[in-house]
Length: 475
Image 1 (cartoon, rainbow, N blue to C red):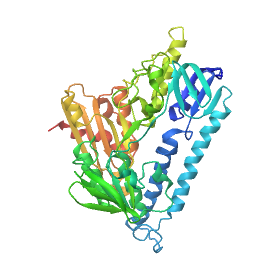
Image 2 (cartoon, one colour):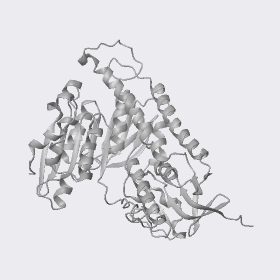
Image 3 (tube, one colour):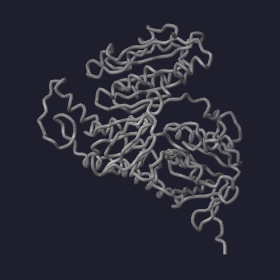
Image 4 (cartoon, rainbow, N blue to C red):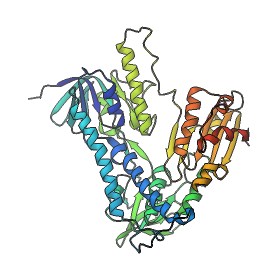
């Protein structure tokens, strides 16, 4: 006999960061069901931002300690504890710190859901069995509106022999109990470079293999080359333009055989070749939800899918791959719902849309890369007459005072409108400083207006208006 359906006003599938944003913005009398088959908090809390940036912080401290003498600070030789030079790294302690922080974030979100009287948390994997109807184990749940927030997972590339070796992805590498002696990374994009630098600073040898002709293929060549040079100075070895033919066990480690016949043997293998949406786990055809050729749920600028009353937010909709875009998706959806619930009076604000936001993100290597807007190739392809200005970090006083002079700032401007097209800030505080350009772009500021802003001295940010003195036609 079928179990009667449980009915709610809103059903949220997944507990990524958009979920808490949505729940906090809904009326208190909205009856909400939240379904989660994995760890509460999704990628960001469990295997993404929170744990990896915690490790980045530990690795940065280790690197600063190695450079202590340049600041007039001496350190004591700690012996061969692990690490590079005269600095020891207690890998177990660093991982314990990471786990304490990520588990605390997960537990905090779990408590938030449990303490909301209008929220029912259902543990298990959801699949559609009809329009606006899902099944979780033996439970059938229906809702007026359903929001998909199921995220993405690491791609498992079709590399011969991969099933025969204990390879790591971005999640499993966080469960290591001992420091790799030699970490071989397949891939040289954002996740690969961040984790590669972390483990190099912890004391592992690191080799990154990339089939493309350069690292960070989405970035301008000068930006990608500068990031690679910074990491090479720390001892990371790169093999670019190198395809992987197969992998195989090699004693206690893994052998990576390249297309050119060479072999690279490591103690551990990290595969970081991209992400894929978790839409394939939902039986979306039962709900009439359409996906694109890559599996991303197709949405409009208000997060609405092809099925009435069904929305998709976060990584699964392919409109952003970051926590901040997921949260913004939730804000866009809340605006849409409030618009539908309102009487259309003058007090109702214009809903936000996905299409109005500029692309903004950061690569959290050290120093970090902050990026907003278009890169050079995109700006030219869009038909802009591009002005470009570049300022090395070594010319910025605060960077010199901090002893952090690697990298540069690059700004792109439309010659006709005098508005910003994009910016790249590779250097100390680049992940924060890029926000100045993101704000200027969102507000539609011209460079003339931007130059009028007075910023505190001495900071890296204060020099951003002065970067514009170097504007010249691209090429």
